[in-house]
Image (tube, rainbow, N blue to C red; front, side, top):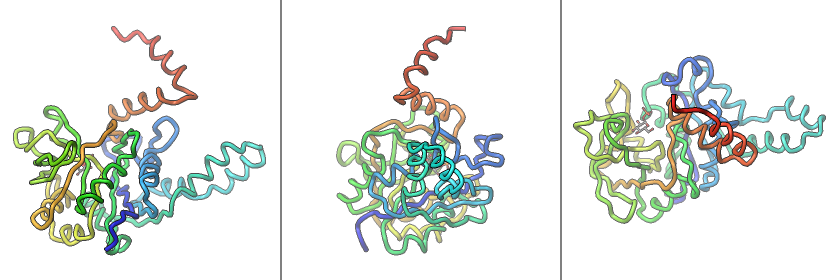
Length: 291
Ligand code: G1P
């Protein structure tokens, strides 16, 4: 087995019910943060972390994702004719970003089931899985931070962050010992526990590095929280056989698949933009927010 993480899987078949009605006919992965769809942020994160090959797991009504990463012949021709070379380069770069393949998850049976669709693509290699609605704004790409831990410990790695109070129930939660600053060895994990049952305040974020034995574990996993085949339950099974690590990411994580999280991420990313930040900041300052 090669020890280099070269492949990444993007589960993108979910129905996006947290963002209706916008997601009724459009994939949530295509919601734009300022001017770029969510999934492009995490594809760029993967590529800048060293990923060479990507599998996006789609479902019905997700063709906009494939179109986005494809060549847009008419648009490119038009931009060329009009001499808009900067826009042309920007549009063309998206289709050159990485080697991307697609497969369809025919039924939405859970995140574990979605990741299982990548079995043939992955073969006998470690691989990453990224959930596009978790956007991580970090100086060192989040997945790169995790790869460093994978390379050091030669074991699967998930991303974690501290979540205060009852909100922890919306996540997978780990029970873990810190083995070096920001790196934990996981003892147990549970998917979306009640607040009183959460083993810690360390939530799982949508970034994973798996070894191929996760697929056998998924095969043995029965439906859990929400009646779905949960990746957290599959990892829990595997935890009996091999060490698993978690890394507290440096950077800010936004849940852009949630309406409030999306609004916050939009404001944060817009403020950072050279072309928009100044005027946007002025506008925000002008708001009378004390009413
Ligand atoms: C998924 C995982 C959960 C994790 C979360 C992070 O849940 O099942 O363990 O904490 O992503 O965003 P979802 O948000 O898809 O329900």
